[in-house]
Length: 285
Length: 325
Image (spheres, chains in turn yellow, brown):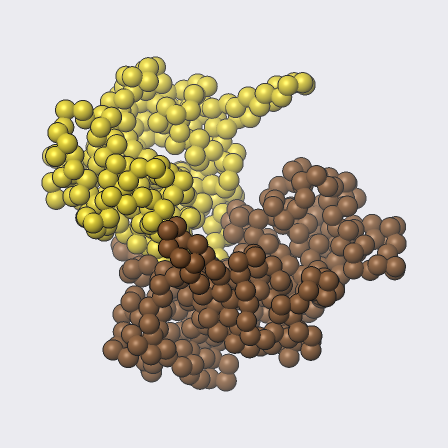
């Protein structure tokens, strides 16, 4: 597969230097109420972590804990209040939008609602090619078309579908289109914000397998944001547990799941329904 | 039998772009019986018809939907009745809990008003404002809402999602219904809250002996709560049995594949077991068994004939040609 090339020197995660490092990141939202005092909401407070090449980091927590804000802050889609986001040593927070354009070639995002994330008035081929038009203007039309078709096939879509519109596809297929759009630039980091929570169980596993397959083929890193702890366990090397904008626990996935230290992590893990009636009855009481 | 559904079909007339009007079969001949005090889960993916089945029962189909077949609830016919006669049953003998607690509550009205309104409508002349308030507050306490007197005067936006869902449950319970239909009651909630709501439903079931029908896409969610599971695919029941039969002795290839695809909190196992393909287009259903295009054990006759319902055990039924799965 030429489009999905693997890195020149595959290095094991533990030895590689940090690809992304987030240092003391804080985001505060001002809830501007016309009358009355300004209410401040601490969406993220003092978050620090590092991500090495080829690593899959899970970010778990409940709604409102700051999972998605973290993704947006890394991508500079959200103004940050303090802290640094270092991408290969370069502080993204100090850059202008234009300077960050180069970063977008390396960090891509896929979204929760696959149909909402696609422009309803663009064809699949236009959607998947758009990042190339924006960031690789030197490519010829023919080259772009070739890469689009190659990616569609790699995602399990068919070439004949390229002139269709998003509404003609099922949720799972729309998510494949979204992944194709993210992968066409050969990103070094793919941020997945609840990539399967809008999909049916039988389709969830297909998309997870596709993502894992792409990861092992290209050697990219991933940040996998999810509220579903069972899926995170299947996908991630390391896990970050967020609660009210703070990291309460972080560690290797196996340690977190086998031996959670923080009370909140324990509570989260205890909340997972078990796929065994006898055990589940015991859990529910 | 408290509830008897016989050969229920739900059709929708849809306009699909430039094509002429088409009929979409959402539910394709479902028969089931429910006894007083039974606790049943209807499990299926989106488009399986699980919600439309009960929307048809409650007279909640949109104008382009129509229901055929027969449904009786305690000897009263339910299907295609006027709103006036349905309103004697809805909210009184059958309570409903919906997926999204924000849209189920009126944002303009205080919680208390919305709760007592239920009694006002169903008790008519016997309605007493003071006792209604007392009962509403008792019910808020019953669903474990803290400071029920204060919450009685709250607006829905002042409560969290889990609290709102408790209010919706309290509302469904107020008239002491014989049956509660809960359509994805925890899907919009966080995992920790989800467990609390399931525990609450189990507690209600135990103490009030109210029958519960829980409609969901999530098999593990009902493993600890329900007695019986009905699995639906493309508008039909493919398998029904006790929770243990479905989890430990599933016979239908779809049930087996669904169980295998369900993510579990177990060690990383490499690849997840997906079901290939996609659910069928309801406007263009395959002939024969609807699952046949995705089935790993498909035979020639599956593509032309609909498999009949086969008995495995007293209450364990499966619609598949293949034996000894």
